[in-house]
Length: 141
Image 1 (tube, rainbow, N blue to C red):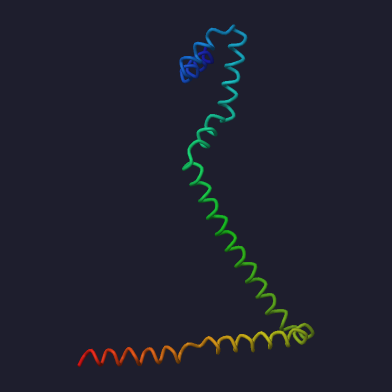
Image 2: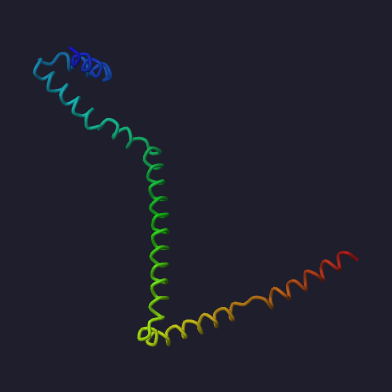
């Protein structure tokens, strides 16, 4: 009895044309169709189709998932690079390995020093500051 009430409710949800077609079918075919309707409801196919038809219901969760993946990749890369740097700092202090890596470390340090000296913008900022002070003094007069 309870199953037939649920089946009737499902049939009412369908369009009236489809419902009349189902009611006109022989009893065995009616039961097969109702079984298919139950299977579709159990699998969640109806919700899936509704999910696909609505672009915002698809875009928003995928956007959130992408942001989470990107954040996870960032955190993971930070941890891995930190661990590699930490392990290299420990390895450099070892006698044999440190002696082998010393030329590379000094080369990296000198290149870094050259880069920082080449990109030092203090003289330009000082000249800009002087020009701005002159402009301010001239506007006060």
